[in-house]
Length: 256
Ligand SMILES: Nc1nc2c(ncn2[C@@H]2O[C@H](COP(=O)(O)OP(=O)(O)OP(=O)(O)O)[C@@H](O)[C@H]2O)c(=O)[nH]1
Ligand SMILES: [Mg+2]
Image (cartoon, rainbow, N blue to C red; front, side):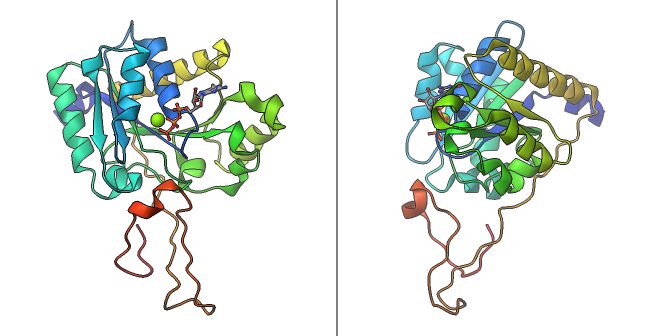
């Protein structure tokens, strides 16, 4: 029966967010918190390297074979949203090789605020911000901040050093999310790690029970290349991040 098939497949849980906000560390934290009671696998996405997979293997949180790298060779959002083939194959291989798995965690390559997973790839997704990125980021919105299943405000232990008011950042994020959950997290703060663990177990239970419905946070914000449209003739581009060089846009105004 279809419902049984759904409940027996591993929960695929995506972790996205800007570069360096702590996605790999959060996956390591989830693995540490749950590896004894759940059968876990991890897939990482990096543009050119398998560095995240190597980091997680060296963290010793799972058998190294359970951590696989997809080298996207392109913008991270392409591989988690537009053409998810490589990630789907990696997830299916991992699930087959280590059957049965309970949860497969999929880390997106670090991208900007607009990258989200396709609901065809993951059942649920976490979007990760960190306090060091500035307290106002939560107010800036975007599909991940607004509609990921869980928004994590990470590295709260750094808040005093960067002058960020965590309760205010959480309140701003909550206001942008229509009641969806926001978790202030630090890997050094045990109660916050316990809350993360509880959230994963809750989503897994809903997935198994057939009551969890994968949500699409929505596409990237539309953007355009102003070569032929902008009155100033400037070049407007919304991907203000490190992989810009690897980027090619065939069509002006493409929404990808
Ligand atoms: N103080 C503090 N540092 C953290 C925490 N979590 C992660 N970090 C640090 O933040 C840096 C980036 O962490 P990663 O987990 O590599 O971040 P990422 O989002 O996976 O990075 P990319 O994959 O490169 O986008 C590392 O130096 C981590 O040690 C935390 O809770 N507190
Ligand atoms: Mg990483």
